[in-house]
Image (tube, rainbow, N blue to C red):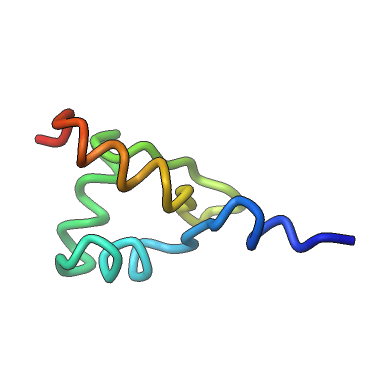
Length: 63
């Protein structure tokens, strides 16, 4: 059975999302809570697809 996390290339948690964005965890958490990042909360933890996160910032919708 294929590992879903690898096939979707998911980033789990505000800390890992912050690392991906190159910002501090507090800033990432603020953006997540405000809905400014295309992420979802799963089991109390933020998760985002890496490709969707990059595409979101590349298309210029980021604040």
